[in-house]
Amino acid sequence: MTASPRRWLILALAPLVTAVLVTAPASPASAEPGGSSSTAQEQEQNGDSDALLSDVIENTNRRYVTAKAAVEKSVKAQTQLANQIKQAEGRRDALIPEVDKIAKEQYMTGNLSSIGYLLQANSSGDFLEKAVSLEEINRLHNAKLRELNEALRTIKESKVRLDAEVKQQQQNAAVMKKQKDQATDALALVGGKGVTDGLVVANSPEAAPAPRNSNGGFSAEGCTEKDPTTNGCVTKRTLHMYKEVKKAGFNNFVGCHRDGGPFEHPKGRACDWSLQKSGFSSFDTDKEFKYGNNLMAFLVRNGEELGIYYVIWNKKIWFPANGWSNYHGVSDHTDHVHVSML
Image 1 (cartoon, rainbow, N blue to C red):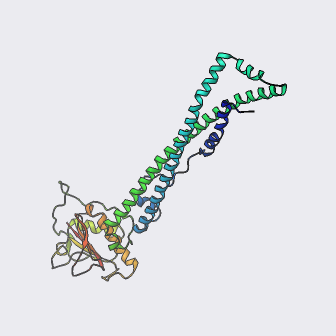
Image 2 (image 1 turned 90 degrees about the horizontal axis):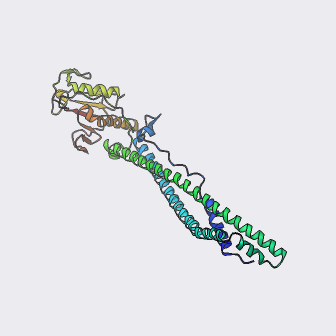
Image 3 (image 1 turned 135 degrees about the horizontal axis):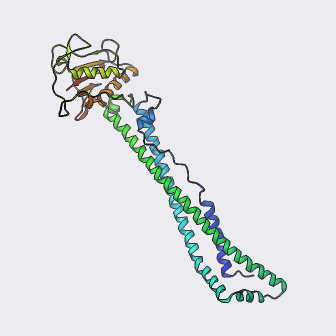
C-alpha cells in the first residue's frame, strides 16, 4: 500500500524526534570548578599558613585553565542545543499547515472523506486493512506531534539550565583569573622570582597601622624612644614597626640604632633583621633564605601602613613609590633585611 502524504510526514518525524529525545540532556553537566568569591590566598592557605606563592601561582593557573575549558565546553553544548531547538521548531512549524488542512477537511466533510476512503476497498480484508490504517495514521499523527512538542519543551528546559551553568562557569573563570592575577601581582610586589625564587609565603599577617598626622601623612619624628636592641634610641614609628615585626613571628637577631655614618641608623629610623639567632651571615639554606623572604614580604606588604621609607634585601631595594630595583652598596644584603622608616 502506498503511503499517503500525511503518513509520509508523520513517519518522517520519527528520526528527528528520536534524535531530539536522545541528545537533550536530562540535567546540565556539573560546573567545574565550583563558584567561589574567596581570594587565592584564602583558598590555598586554609589550614596551611606556609603555602608558598610559587605554589599558589601554579595552582591558580591550573584552576583557571580548567575553569576556562569548562566554559568553552558548556558554550559549545549551548550552541548545539540552540541548533536542535531551531531544527525541531522548523519541523513542527512545517506540520502546522498539514494539521490545519486535515482539521479543515474533517470539519467541511465530516466523515465523508474517511467513508469514501474505506469504500474504495476491493474486499472485506482490504476494507479492514484500510480502516486500521486510517486509525493508525490519526493516532500516529497526534502522538508524534505531542512527542515533538514534549521534546521541544525538554530541550528548552535543558537549555535554560545550561545557560545558567554557562553564566556560573563564566563567573568561576573570572574568579579564577582574578586569583591568578592576584597571586602573580603578589609575587611581583615582593620582588618576583628574581629576588625570592618563589620561596615566600603566599600570605603575610596584617600589621597595625602606625599613627598618622591630621593630614593623613607621616610627620618627621625625633629619636625619642629607647631602642630595644641597643643602648641607643629610635623614633616612635620605628619602635612601632619593630613591635609589629616581632608580633608577626620574626624573632631572630635584630639591630636598629647605630652611631655614626649616614642614612637612617643614627637617626633611629632603621633596623637590620638578621637571618640568624645571633650575629649576621649570608643565607646558605632554603630555610634561612625563606626567613629573609618572608620578613621582607611582611615589611613590603605593610609598607604603607607602617610608614616604611625603603627595604633592602638580596641585592634589591624597594621603594613604595616605584617598587623594586637593583641595589649596589657596600653590602649586598644577603645576610639581613634592612628597613628604613619615614
